[in-house]
Amino acid sequence: MKNCGMAGIAAMAIGVPCIAHAQGSVTLYGIIDTGIEYASVSGKSTTRLESSPVYPTRWGLTGREELGGGTALIFKLENGFNVDNGTSLQNGALFGREAWIGIKNNLGQIQFGVNYTPFHTTLVTYSLGGIDTLAWGNAANNFVLPATLRTNNSVRYVSPAMAGFTLRAAYALGSNGATNLPRTFGNTMAVGISYSLKNFSADVDFMTQVYSTATTPTAASQTQTGNYALFAAKYDFGLAQAAVLFETHRGGSALGSAANYANVNNNFYEVSLVVPIKLSGLMFSFGQYKNLANSAGNATSYGVRYDYPLSKRTAVYAGVAAVVNGSAASFTVNDSAGAGVSVGTPGHNVVAGLIGMSHKF
Image (cartoon, rainbow, N blue to C red; front, side):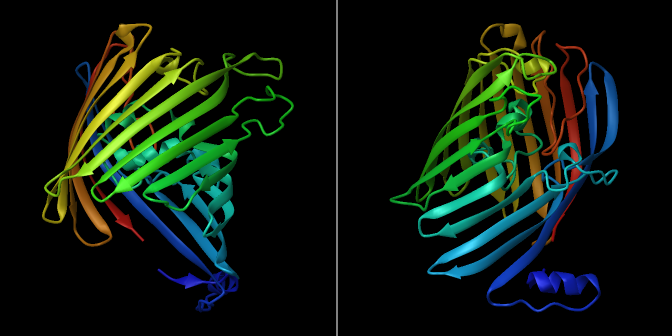
């Protein structure tokens, strides 16, 4: 890994080594993750090469320039892509995972662009399947609504830690003034408070997001507002780390929703445990999705995965996971950056096995 200024990046493009300058730096980073998954749905099996089962495959650039007085300009550009065919994720956006510029000082950090929501930060912290990610085998990864995790046209603020408390807040203009969509479509407001003391941490988050019930929204489409709450706690016992999270959704159908999320009132929870075994880790996850209007839409998720590091940057893993669906539910075992094998008709269950490897650079 090499840090170099913008001039250095240009120099590298023509084969000239770069030298980092004190006033600013740019870092190239990434991770490649792939595996082979076997899934069985109602007696029909599928074997496929998986991109990003445990860690979202991506590459990115981060930068920082000191402006003086303890203030720094910072930025991040991150691209997600498929290992199996090389195509970009996030609907083909070059930097669809994150793309923001911001300021950081002793008052906190503020950033503008494509940002993760406070909900995302809490979910990836307390769903213990991977570092800063929702991973294969985790119940939260199978049940969470993707539109709650990342927002375009947004502002995000994170406060410095004070007496163990940290404040996170975000606001997004969903349609950003587009004349072919409802004026408030996709608008998102979120706030979260995190507390950490020694081996214990807890988070509470609240979020609202404006939707339309129309399949293809237009400027004249009616909108609704969905309300979310998220509660999470984690404790490190030394011999094991345990976490629980609970999310509620009320009052609005889901933005870009599938049939699973059409009900306006639903909950899900996950209980996860990671047991360190020397340098490796064994993860257990159990969780349930509750459709409060129709119990036939309920689902239960089970997951076990073993991760073993070959080096500081390379790891291998293997796991088994399952989702048991009610007669009106069709959840599946998802990858960290995409949907798993479809169960097809609602009410079918899925059992999956996975082996894979990841490399960070």
